[in-house]
Image 1: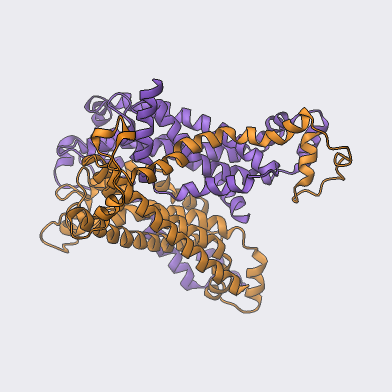
Image 2 (image 1 turned 45 degrees about the vertical axis):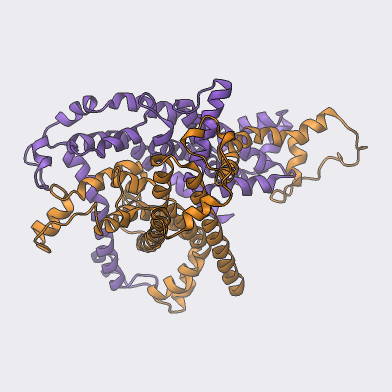
Length: 291
Length: 332
């Protein structure tokens, strides 16, 4: 870095040498701090059980893929996987559709109650989850008793809960995105004979794809990683990965190599999805913070 | 047509002169009702779910906090006897075990939150500033630093739980066997050290979010500001102090508040890190309330505690917004 610059005359914008050193050292330390748990996860998942039960070794002496095979029978991992996938995919899909509709209304129309809606929805974000948890659990139990629609201990109840969690952020983010789409496009669509819904589907949604994708990834991540509500609202048959793995890791005798393998397998899809789409997220946050 | 008139009313787009809809006699018409009703129709699903999952449960929670709701009344909660303010007295009475545990949990949560927010903000802002100017590997590092945030919270906490194991964890291996800082391997997940373990785990997961938000905020600062300052002779550090930090103020205002609320309500980290019994030194409020409610099946006092937590957070938010907004207006 410095060698390529030292030949040129220093411009007033060029950072001083002290800054370059701070940058080098600081970023290296942070990179190591970030890497250590990831490295532990990967290396442990490839060690035989005997090696993880003794003192920790940085370099594995023997490598094995057994943990990736055994983990499926140690805990009902495939079952958790199905539950988590169904819950996360359904809540994401429904949440995105509902958020698009609501954000379109807030972005394109001025109507009484618009401000109240925006403020109320955003302020629910700050309320402690534990405050909703008990009453929501009771409400679900009682809805089940009186109507026969089972919401506690079912995937449906969890889907409804998760899709609502992500609505406030999704709506807020999409309003920012929709606002940045020129209204001339709407007008052109209207001249072409589209109604409001046609305009939304043919003009606004295609132009806001990055924002919609960001919101979808966020919703999926939230549903995939949620622990608190899932720990109360699921039973053995509807248990999600988050609660299943957490419960297993809390036991006294844990096969750490297998649980690291399982953690890695459940993390890879969300991490890859997130990292591929993070520049949209930065763009979305930038658009949101301007407002 | 409907879209065009609505669009023309918004200030953002100075649309061509609206068609003379207003000039027409105002008559009740199906088309007009439909047009006025459309935004409400679009909001309807969102409102329904918000009511079911957020608004109604919150009101019910407040109602429950005045009830003596134990396991016997779960199926028939209307019959739960009224408790008046007993639940609140019970929660706030520091002479009994529950009250004193709640108070200790409150102080633990407050110090945990302040530490995690301060450290995460400092590291995140620092990293964003270091990566503000183009340098080799910038794009790669910007993506790489987001990995902890992208990991599901529970897998990160499980990994740290393994690293903090006394006999086969990485932390003791480094401290005891490689750096020889102590001769006896300490416990990290029980006792006083558990607070340190909790903070380290939370900071590892939280700072990338601060980094992400500050990075986004930095992109809104026009480059000409820096160039003008540099021509005026301002050095690197001065530019950071005089231009970058003041420009980031609106971003930081929101960021610090969000970080505070998230960490104050954090449940995942201690719940996953410590297994079934969290040590009192690291028992955050959400977990404390959870235990009171579901281990003792006492929903009334659990709800009273949740309401107290909400009131505290509302107070903090209001005071914070008041102070920071006043500071901003004074500057202007």
